[in-house]
Length: 65
Image (cartoon, rainbow, N blue to C red; front, side, top):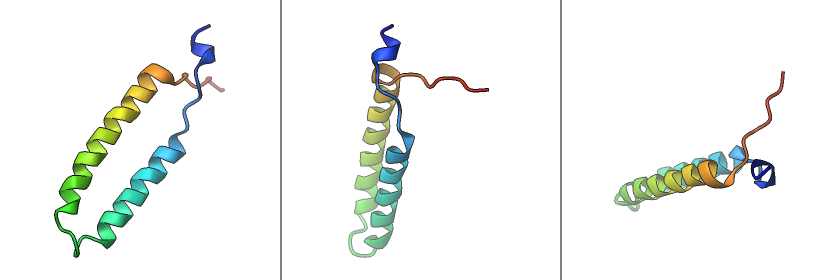
């Protein structure tokens, strides 16, 4: 019953965030080369928080035939 009370997972928002981050670092790479290193660190932290969200707070999807 505890599983049913959790929120559903929305993957599109996570993908959109990664795409926007990649776009910004691509556009501004010439102006700020160290930005790619900072962005890699940011993406690592973001992946860890998404992993926590999937494991601890999100409900598993219902199976469909």
